[in-house]
Length: 364
Image 1 (cartoon, rainbow, N blue to C red):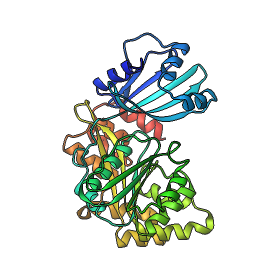
Image 2 (image 1 turned 180 degrees about the vertical axis):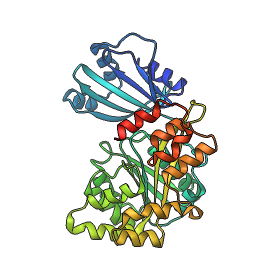
Image 3 (image 1 turned 30 degrees about the vertical axis):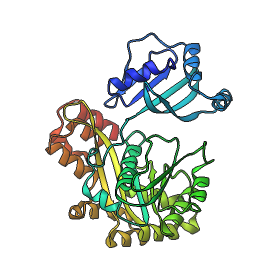
């Protein structure tokens, strides 16, 4: 057993989401969004280098020695599975390990509304799951792939960096490929996937215009494409895709989104009311004819009004979802206030009086 497993196992047992290892401090674990140290001595540069080196293969050691950061999957029978980022900094090496649950969660377990399953009934088009780093996008996508795997007879190809959840083929055939291991890049993986008779393609991240273009091509040519962007609202997601295109291609990108985008699920993780967990709060946009018309005519700024009035179709703004969760006593109202866009309607729920001037000062 690698010595690093002891820290990873301890973090998992305490219910953390991440374990951080850095020189000069003890190992740190993130629980319910906040970092706290493990009771252990400060790690030295030599000790941490040896801990990290022990879990790398020959090629990874060579790359890491050259100063290249590594994104890898790490698995041990005792400690479980992790997504790891290993890096160099001024005091030595460092590592961040994301805990991957042993079981793939179900959509209902994540609190996903029924409209998500309706989106997955599509045979072609683009579905986007968005949010800041660490908001559970990968977990949501894994649950979506798991639902398709158990309900439809499809060929599913996933492109991930790195592979986190392991899917076993059920009703569908699931082929998982890791960027940097099985394919050079998401772009190369998409090129290859289009020749491999896919029904569903998961793109772990739409990082650049070329990847976005290929994802659009796949969605246009009869495939269901699932992907992620680091955007914090439906409107920002649409703007990001269009803005990523060269000037002459922006109208074509808007036309594609109007015709082939199925929906956008934007999520944030907010502390639960008891402070013992975090709950995914969702902004959901379904591409109705009205929204498609706004996209086509570049009036994306008007879309929030459609989300606000589209509750019967399963749509909602992030602020609507936050307010509903507060009223149902599912989330911490102070944390909801911090995450809200229109903070005025959340002020009456705040329990920490110091929060209001702090946030107002930051905004001004």
